[in-house]
Image (cartoon, rainbow, N blue to C red; front, side, top):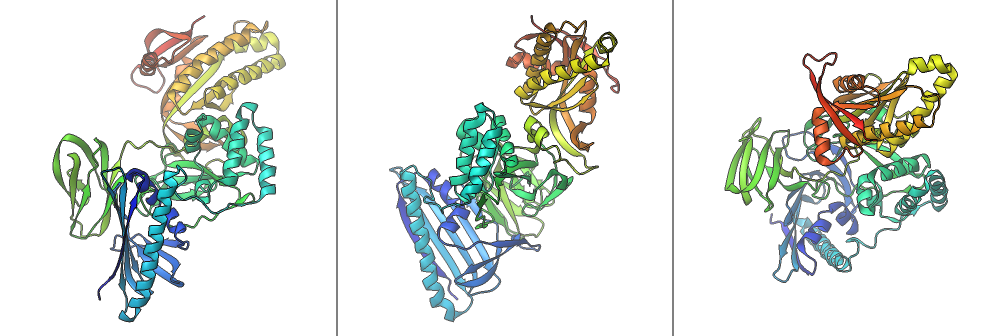
Length: 600
């Protein structure tokens, strides 16, 4: 039976890239044209489809298999659905965006539907034309909004806000914030109250910090305080390293497991706190009810680093267009096989690869706007995609959040399950200790000496917090602190020695007490130790033992980090007095270390 085909062409004044960004957000597009929310469940099988979806269409409960979307950014998007019931066998929607000479864009829409029975042809024809008309009308509305520099889908649905609960939680938030952070708190409260559901249902602090031009640390701290105030809820998401969408969503870190699975990409995820777990926020249900849909479960908007995606048929081949921008990309086939793609003017115009248990060849150099041709050798229908590797991540990782002072102070109960060891690819750890403290206890007595130690802890804690770090724990007279970045850790060690110098100058009872500091950065594991997030591994051992190499008033760190710090100007206020081979317990070879002193 001949399928139905409805096409529309809309000439738009907006540039192609802007229109692509709006139309790629298929969730908002579906919602705007009046589609109903979806319910999906994972499926297995020989087809490329990974999800079975249920919704209401034409007033009928419909079930269909959602095939992976196919696109080539920013030109073409295609969506195919295979229905298990209802009046149609299958449905395909496509749009093409063509740049015109005058800077305008031609948007070409097409809808193809295969009727299940001949007598349903008139019913489907009327409805297909109606869908095409609504889509064309929405494209015109998007174009008009873009021309006014407005949100593409303006006006959005009015938020379902409980104004009394919002006012109460806003007051509680502002009461706890520092005066310098009050404006950010006000802005967050406005955001929660007035922005569309799809914007506030997954609040990413780094994204807001960039949009509002505020420090990331401030944004994270304000969001955490908003959780305590009852305005926001904190959620943890395990992110697939390939599609970068949410594989698992958790309410607490205690629900985290060492591995997870992405059904779409069919890969196992080793949970790494600074790569695979992201902290996001959403309005508390007492403050605002959200229409979260979902209205779409795939699409380019959800995976902005994917420049092209298509279906690879069993025993067949697929072709992906290479972007014109040179750079590093990755070709990924569902199941985990991948190849490194270098887009360079020295590359070939067409490169062929074979997708078996692995992708061969594993490394490819191809010219801009060339073609990658992938041949299936497993006899499986899968999807294949080209991913940009240099996509800037805006993920507020779980490791980053765990280094925020406000998190450790306010959310100490949100820890990993006992016995679980979660990898952190790189953490910067600082240890401090006091020399001459034993003599001080003898000289001053236990009570006065204890007070001295606690006051020095408070002095150093301020420095650590001001340098975007957090105290993990104190052990006797010593501090263990963690930083997300080495630069912050190096600068903090210098500031700690400076702050301690000022501290003891004000103390007539200090005697010969001095501060020793050691710092190291590397991979380690995060664990639940006595209901706090603690670190263990060789990185911890080396950082602690470098501190033991410090003499009073000194900082000891790896020579490689000291050289990097000198090169990038991180050593303001300090200087390297020597590089030396440190003999550390547990290491068979001397460790190249550097000794720093604070300049007077």
